[in-house]
Image (cartoon, rainbow, N blue to C red; front, top):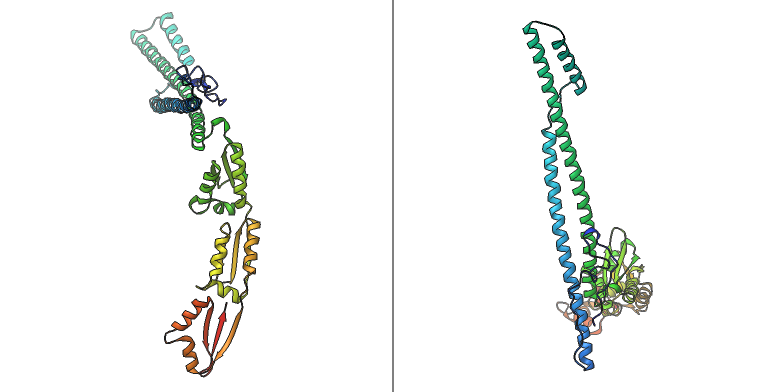
Amino acid sequence: MSSPPPSYGLSLGPLAVPDPIMGSASLAGWSQHSATDTDDVSQVTDAFSVEEKQQFDLAKKLGQRLDDLTLERDRTQRQVQVEQQQLNQLNKSQPKRPRDTKSVLQQRAKQLERDRVSRSMPLSQEKSLIRQIDGIKKSLRMHTQADQHQQTIYRKKAEMAKARELLKTLNAQVAKMEKVLSKVDLAEKLNCTPADIVMREIDCPIKLLQYVSGADGSNVRAIERKCSVDISIDKIRAKIRVQGSTSACIEAIQELKHYTCAVDMEITPNSDVFTYLLSRQSAPLNAIKESHPEVIIDVWANISRIKLRGHPTNVDAAKVAFESLAVTSQTRPLSGSREVHLVIGKTGEILRETSEKHMVIMDVTKGSSEKCTLRIIG
């Protein structure tokens, strides 16, 4: 007998299936499998097949449910728009009311009718009274039409309020369903069950957010692959959100702390060390970078400083590596053009070859008359 589909403990509102989502009421057609092969390996294989089938059916049904909710939401949205247009038209076509109120007009009509029947008068005067009474009746009909039009507006506003409330409910249900479906998709991506997924948040200094992300998000992707988690960075709140199983989140947070706890350090080596590090023959600089890949090393040539960024332990190790460089310099005077030529060569090729062979920096400076000085750093 297959295990029941996972429960999320979420209710989807008026249009939702009973809690838990996609429970027995909604999954009446859920396929039931049983292992028919007596072989143990086959039974285990069948069990995994059933679980995969259930998760696939769950995602499929949730997707169908989301499509239905989205369609109904779109229909309701269009209904709200149509009713808003109708309401605008009703407001524009609202009939004008007479200046006098209905009660005043009714009282005036009664008085005129009483005058007409209570005493004798010339025919012309009676006709005048009748015309006045007819005019008052017309004004009363205008009041009635205006009242009916106003009632239509009230009904339309009530319909709009109801439609908007339904739209609000549908938006909430769509958002909830998208959240559930994303959780199912995330569980499939992380190779775990939706019930196993938890969310953890850690703080990160704003200035380190880019460092945590890495070039084009390389650091985040590496941690995601290593720990089987999903990581998102909230740059506004300066927080990092980690989703996955509990153990995976703990492991990922430990990896992230190598970046979130990073410190900046500046070191100022002596001029010989700095000159040597910037030369093409400086294998030590590349060696330090390769042996400390978790530390960002920036060499600022204009101010002769080196900036280190990374976890405090790693930064201290890189600092020690720079401080342990044994770089010295020696100078030697060169007398006469013949000796200078022997050191430099015709176009400087001897000086370059010697520097590359011994991995040192050789620099010849010209002094007074024909005297030159050779400086060697290494």
